[in-house]
Length: 450
Ligand code: SDX
Image (cartoon, rainbow, N blue to C red; front, side, top):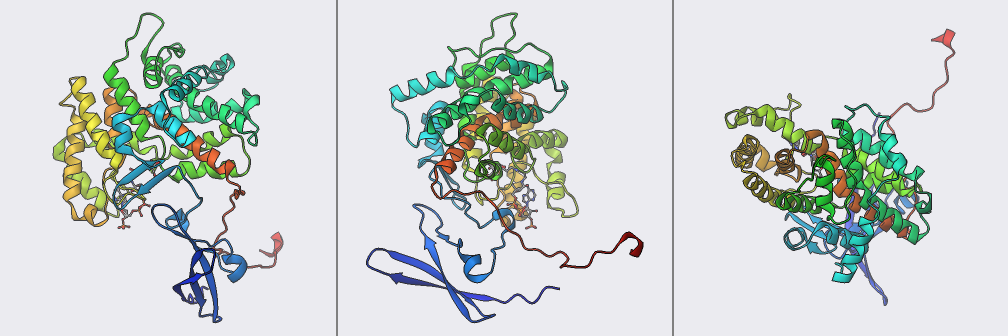
């Protein structure tokens, strides 16, 4: 039986002293007349936070925030999102500038180290990543334990988690040098792992990384080359993929990044933590949405069917949702989706697929949804997943590989966030509490008494 919740009054106050102005909120519990000052901690950009670390000790209350819609889980300097205004910054640089003028290796360096590299730093970083891109040959046998029709994300979870069995010299999380080696290995090896996942599924021999190729080019080569003849990677497709990898590289404390941080907070090794992130990303509400978008667009089939699907998306009795629409944080257009839409046009033009029916359906779906009161009222806009599948589809990348490529791109963000957590002096094991609404203590009844 829930007692009527006692409201607590909250007032903001300023207590200034000679050192610094420490703002606070005062919590007044009308239940017992007590008042509590909760310090406010200021960020550099975006919302400030109420420090509730002493709330339970001082008041006996927990906060209640399922889904963490209003909870800052950490203090980070890596990525900033302003959902109201559709802003995304990697270490302060707008995603639009990075997508236009940078590349995935520069963005990876930026996320990992906090600054854009000089030409010499970039060359050294690319060299180090290139020379970590091969896999221990034993790992090739690991693939053979999977069915050929295993979902690539199942294989990625398994292979990435198994890396800790091969690289014992980069497991000491308290050694910054070993952390960086593990970080480089994960960024470097993900394209090989993902491409081999595809090759295993189609029964073709594994293609080894080529040291003269750059990151995105190497991945497409490992995906589509065969030992039988030279394979030329289209520069337009490689550049488009490089841009897509940049757009997916990091995104603040999303579900999979929070999973990596929580796994890492127990002291688990980085390979196990990234495997946990892959598992979380797999879900259709998160990284699995790009695969679901193409399935949805294919099911819609033609522009004339769009109104029926929009109706279904609004019908609460129908579980159907517009995949690739909506976002926990963006209540405006996802800035990545705009760049993805432009990239979709570039790739389809380059492949002479301007009339791709999936794109026509997607554009009509977006047009109708953005005019519809249901979506406007709930501020549901296309997100990063809405166009990526159309591009991958045009590149002849199978739908089941879409989320594996998302995982490939997000690995540098995950491992950057993991490093930041390990290096945080205030870091401790993550251990949320709960609101318990189950049975109170009761006497056990023996079987013959029930
Ligand atoms: C990613 O967090 C990140 O940063 C993630 C990501 C990253 O880079 O890491 O950006 C990548 O995961 C993008 C999101 C990909 N997922 C999808 O496209 C799946 C479809 N989208 C939804 O499932 C949903 O929008 C979420 C999960 C993305 C967000 O859900 P929220 O914030 O929990 O919002 P909600 O479920 O509370 O929805 C609010 C309202 C509800 O209606 P009401 O109860 O108010 O009447 O909007 C409705 C929802 O029913 N709604 C949708 C909808 N999304 C929300 N209705 C129809 N279609 C949708 N897609």
